[in-house]
Length: 207
Image 1 (cartoon, rainbow, N blue to C red):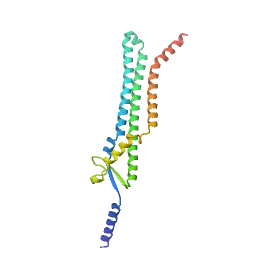
Image 2 (cartoon, rainbow, N blue to C red):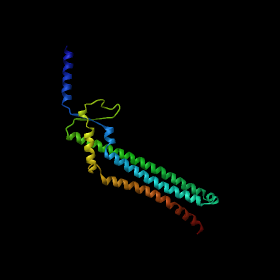
Image 3 (spheres, rainbow, N blue to C red):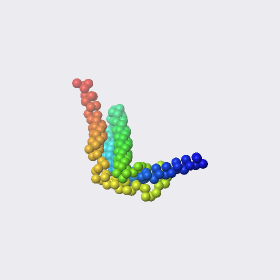
Image 4 (spheres, rainbow, N blue to C red):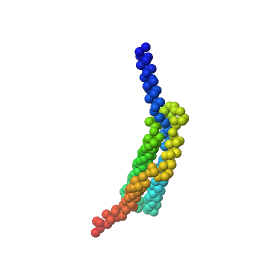
């Protein structure tokens, strides 16, 4: 009997504690997917990918045109040089892929931080003790009352702040973007200057 009483008191205490807590939840997949910051990051990454592909295609076309202009004899004579240029093109393609992967990872981290920081501020502002995250299948929240679903309310305010420029550090984004573009530009310029350097090296022994 004593154990039953203790258990009953514990249940009442737990129920009282839970009742005093303000809890909400969000569908994290929906929140991130429909966040304007995610869409902007994806559009920017797509543009960078297209720009890099265009540059690589131009360099590849220039190389192919150069080879076609050569006679079979000239191709055999310049075989090592042509192979070196081809390897440089392949290295440039790999570097471009690594840069895009790094940029993609950075975008994911930036978007996640923006969403997490906003949810924290929202919880403090509206005095929530917990805002749980759930996903479509097997999430942390298997069921919750619809009135406690904050997904659309938070998404609306989140997008409003993003569109107003309150979630984006334009200076940092432009700085990082400039750094990456300069890196690609440098590689392309080095690729263009390589034949000149090789030519100067061949001329030295004749002097």
